[in-house]
Length: 175
Image 1 (cartoon, helix red, strand yellow):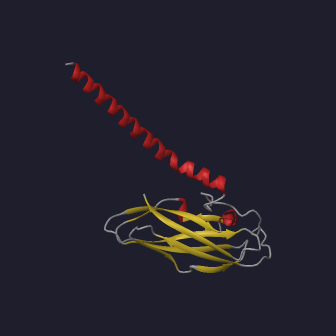
Image 2 (cartoon, helix red, strand yellow):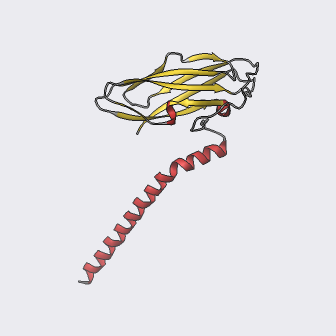
Image 3 (cartoon, one colour):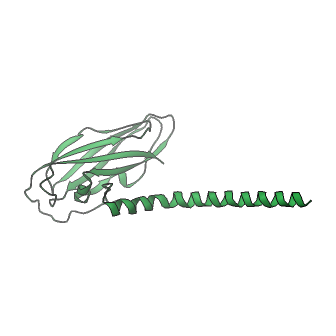
């Protein structure tokens, strides 16, 4: 009888540790994104762009050198075709540009994705002003469905002249 009680106590202790481990893993997974953002901000890496629509600071266009804007898309293993017809273009800082991205879901069921934007070189992220972007919200396409997703952006006239090329990349993640 005493041996059974000892075994029951051990089982209860193991179960308690397992439950504590599950709770810890859930809490860690929940806190991972804010921790990552804080770490990247502290180290000055990751070139993330502000999450919502932004406004141009000045209404006048300043005469500065054009910037070569390259747009790259990574579909991260998702069965979608996602591209823009203008993967590279010369943009004048301070001027507004409308760029269409074409998306097609090649899967056999509806799928929701979230596009995450990144700027390279990372120190130029603060100069990218997105007024409208498909990356602000999740995008859902049915099986075989296609859509045109808009991007409206401007490059701040305050961009340092030492930079002539800026890469805006989007990575698609399934939700």
